[in-house]
Image: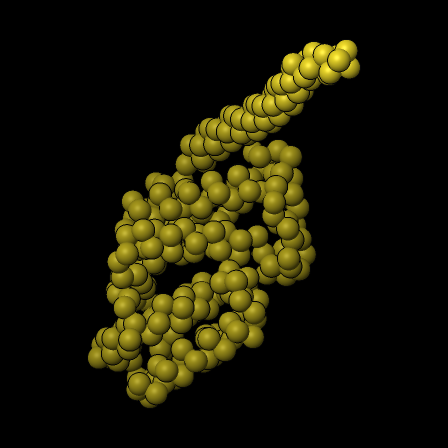
Length: 87
Length: 188
């Protein structure tokens, strides 16, 4: 079974339709949506760049702290090695 | 519409990819038809005006993506308009309204030399209510918009043979309901 409503009506007068013609308004809306698209694209691009930079910084700092920690561990071990050699 | 006319229209559309003001020619040419097409599916002038304006805005915003596929540019507008109408009904979750020109329905019946009477007309309307939405859509495009099957196929995103099949099935259903004869092509 269909679930649509079917109506019969008179023919639409072209003058009635003419009232709704508004090309200048359409152009304005188009310009607005173009501007909005540009802004969204800019923010998306900025967001992606920020995320990439943050990830880069996190990775670099992780590696840097890792290297630093290892060198500190080595420094702590060195005296023991020297002492054992002296004995 | 001849192939040359289709090409010429496409050139206008192609031009509007560089200079969006050129789109105005197509807007003026097709506004009325798209308005009537939407109005036939809403029966509300204000809503039709909104959806029609939205249709042309979407077309304007996506003019750069349009690819020539051998059908008139208007088929693309019909496709967008149909999608906008469907989107509206999906959001509202209400029954779709088809508001048909009585004069055109009379014409279609008269074309078949049927003895026209009010009862026949109202029966037809009642039987059409039982048809699924997709069948009413093809009937609308074929008999009220006078579209070729390849255009209907493009608008409804189906194959040409699928569009023909759906139209014939819809007409067959109406025929079996009461002995009404409508020509498959809807023309004399």
